[in-house]
Length: 286
Image 1 (cartoon, helix red, strand yellow):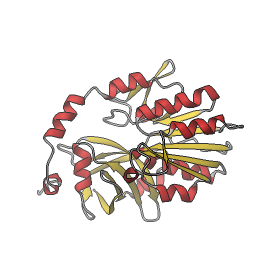
Image 2 (cartoon, helix red, strand yellow; image 1 turned 180 degrees about the vertical axis):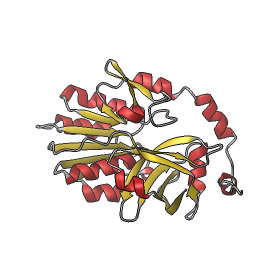
Image 3 (cartoon, one colour; image 1 turned 135 degrees about the vertical axis):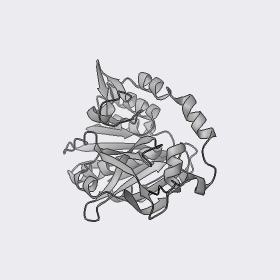
Image 4 (cartoon, one colour; image 1 turned 45 degrees about the vertical axis):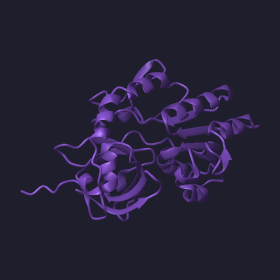
């Protein structure tokens, strides 16, 4: 059991929780994730990137969007409640080195997994430009945290309610057109966003890393549900990733695979609990 130590709602559907997980907190590196299962008998297994960790406290921070049945149940938990199963850290850590100028792009909830990478890139001595995008101002998350680390922070919203009225690819293109262009781009967010970030940097030869969040069951390479095509190779996101060269990822194939269970997801949404009490995990008594 992993107890919830703190809980905060960041926007309409986005929550931040701090969870007791001392071994994971000690071992975790930027870019890695955990598999969360709320209860063993009936619980769906969902991957969530570790947004932060405190080895001294023995805790990790998870930021997630309550969009499906399981994430809505997770959002309904209170401080003192527990998550039954928490597996990690999983995946390959981000390769951190001093390369020069790094542009980090976070779309929507993608700002959460981007944050530990941003911290590590800055600590390695890089000049750091961060672009954070969202549909509206209310959905922009981690602005203060990013501003504290970045040399430059650019906010974009679809409706212009915060920062530039633009897609994240617009300031990314401006930066790539500069002389010299960035040495590295890191993009995390919705698959379509990452696809077009990679297409934006491609003509300029800017190496671009994307972090993929695919269908995943076990998180250890056995089920094959998370497979993606990278160049001419088949890769498993859970063990080979989650980060890959964005210029080599077959995003169109990945998007088709992400829709494989759309019907079942819709059914789960229609049957989801409507009240906070219904979302809570029932206590199992021996």
